[in-house]
Image 1 (cartoon, rainbow, N blue to C red):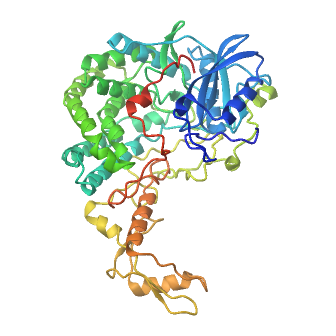
Image 2 (cartoon, rainbow, N blue to C red; image 1 turned 90 degrees about the vertical axis):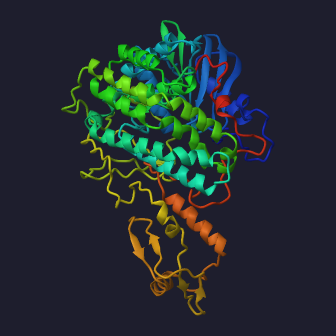
Length: 588
């Protein structure tokens, strides 16, 4: 059993038919590991009830009845190194006085058990109830509790060996990504012009693309670059998935649960997400609600003038438009013919009141005191504090470090005007605590010549990008094999440098002949396959700010068979409303 590694179980490797509802079941191997984990604690378990599972990720929560009272058992679906970051944070905020479930130590003194390639945690089961959604008072309770959590998280430094998680420096890239992908939406609506929602999308996509670019311009002129230089511990962490299901009323006030996705960031990013989702649910941008939610948060975790300004910028970005319509990248035909039109009309109806409400809200900026960002208060790079004892350090040691994490990432000196090259997704390096270095300069508009800079190719040049490369390849000891011909002098976008090189048939033939090993024949492909391959390769080169590749999304300018998510044949995609519904989850 120790050799079994927990993976997402919505698709079984052994070919067995999946249960009807994986949300309320786990594989027998996972259930067996749960039994082994419970034996690692000083408790006698009389019963175990599965509360919820995440079959698409590989996580689950049980309520267990023990001789010490009801408790919660949870398997964290992320890697052990990443989960160690959130486990350390949970212990830290509890010590700071936050209303967060305290982790119960195992027999060996650790606050977690590592089995099945995942970390497991146990806490006491606390009876919680959701704050009311029908009035502003409930929303204010939620915002006040969020502010308390953010305040208690300030100063957190992860344990040594934990994979650091930070979005603090990525705001410019986030707005660039939104603008870029909204541009993709335009081209996909053109490519699938016969679908129901294509014309509606084309009529408004320019407006939302401009909103994202305007937000980027305003962020550039704001105090954001100076704010992030204060460093990650100065700001603390964000929850990233905060809402009525993860902030609930309990003993002493509002409790914050489900902390396994926390990351460093400007804390009011959580507040912005809560406001925009609430306005979307209400169908109107209500100034009274927005002011009430911000004021409640401000009482718990005071905002300064610069923070309020950046919060306003984040509210003006087309967050809900991008959030809901990006589904088209996974199954464009189905989405554009079924859900997209209704979603778009709801967003357009809600946004009719957005500009006026935010203009009125912006007048409140004078009520906030200016912040002091003249000097960095703490190092931007997190430095693991010296453990109080050898036993303390051993309590945070992972039993089996990720083999991919052997090469620890190190800080890199960054020249002004250049972006940090983020690690490639395939290598999955783990960043541990390192010596303090000068925080990187925040670059809002990276040099487009850099290989990792995000650029959008004009639509007028897309046909040029999709032209197949023409080459006459000579095989050693045989006649040359001719590829399908195209126009001489076509442009090819270099995959590394981002520069364009004009190639003709003779030059390509010489280079290809020199690189082709003796005795290796060049495999022929049909015309349609060649074009499809070219479009797919171009889509893979388009990387997000995190260095990940959108392999699931084929090139938006190439009309091809719609890609789909990895779903089993008997597990249909659930509507968003069903995904968000969490029942019976009183404690995580």
